[in-house]
Amino acid sequence: MIQPLFMVGARGAGKTTVGKALARALDYRFTDTDLYMQQHTGLSVADVVAREGWIGFRQRETQALQAVSAPQTVIATGGGAILAPENRAFMRATGLVIYLRAPAGTLAHRLEEYPQDAQRPTLTGKPIAEEMVEVLAAREALYQEAAHYVLDATASPDEIVADILRRVQGELVR
Ligand code: ADP
Ligand code: MG
Image (cartoon, rainbow, N blue to C red; front, side, top):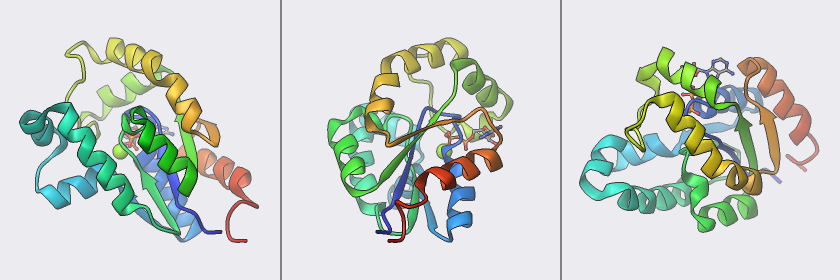
């Protein structure tokens, strides 16, 4: 089995950063559903949301998730990809799902420190720290439900990659 690995978690959890490092360590390809959508529509996440609303964005996200899913690939998903039951079922059935879990304060701190990596428009219009508390409260159970593995995303990227490798060992390349 050489299933795809799906990285899930909130904005700022490190899905892109850790996903890329994990792909290097496994010699897998890396794709990012947000980037895939940008390349295929020529629009940023913010543009799609402005034109089609979050509902249109979520529909495109489901298509993107299925399009990029391939063996030997690490896939960084959007923070809200787990909202759709269809996406959760698809990821669990076709791959291994890794939840990068971090407290709201850590996420807010990272997004404030590196706003260029945040990419997405605010979901609620509230200050980022407050928004992260709400987003996690609404989604924690869904991240947990989707995940095969829950990782402490406050560790360094190298430590998280090592932790993932230990845990998926035996599941991959049989
Ligand atoms: P996501 O793709 O989940 O939104 P990113 O990988 O873009 O998150 O990371 C968001 C920001 O946090 C980036 O600036 C990144 O460098 C930083 N970051 C990611 N993971 C970690 C980590 N484990 N420790 C410290 N900073 C991190
Ligand atoms: Mg990302």
